[in-house]
Structure formats: C-alpha cells, structure tokens
Length: 146
Figure 1 (cartoon, rainbow, N blue to C red):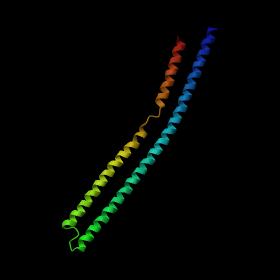
Figure 2: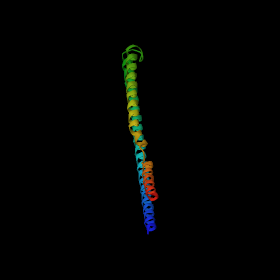
Figure 3: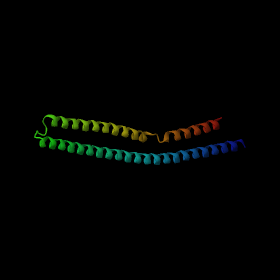
C-alpha cells in the first residue's frame, strides 16, 4: 500500500513537473513573440528617427544655401565681391549657425537612438521560467527521496 502512495506521489510530481515545463515553454513562446514585436517596433522607430534627422539636415542645408545666395546677391548689388568683407563675415556666420544647428540635431538624434535601444535589450524571461521549473522539479525530487 505504501508503494502505491509513493507511486502516486511520483506520478503527481511528474505531472506537476510536466505542467510546469509546458507552462515555461508557453511563457517562452509568448516572450519570444513579444520580443519580436518589440524589436520590430524599435527598428521602425529608429528608421523614423533617422528619416526625420535626414530631412531636417536637408532643410538646414537648403536654408543655408538660400541665405548665402541672398547674401551674395545683396553684396553684388551693392558693388562688393560676394565673399569679401562684410559679405564674407555674414556667410561665415550663417555657416557657423548651420553647423551648430546640425551639431544639436546630431546630439538629439543620438539621444533618441539611445532611448529606443534599451528596449532591444530587455530579457525575454526564458531563463527565469526554466529556473523556476527546475527548482520545482528539485523540490519534488527531494520530497520523493525523503
């Protein structure tokens, strides 16, 4: 009779371990699916940030070109060489302002990339689920041996 009790305990423990393993497998599949979704969203966000940064850079470049062309035209209309004296100083100042704006945009772009990147590094929980399952199996095996 005591053997039946031990056999029942062993079967119960096996069923419990199997259920925990199955639950860990399902959790792993769910975690993997969520990780893929998160990675896709992060990649899309990074692409969006890069496209916006590129668009902003082109806009600044066009504004600089237009500003310098206007400065050169005003200098030429007043009889100066386009890039001599005050016209050169104005063009240089415009270039410096554009470079500073590009530097700020690059810093903002890097910060936005860093904000998105940690999402790709979040653990998927696989190891934790397997460790919990193994701990349960170890506890049940110990109780059987006692």
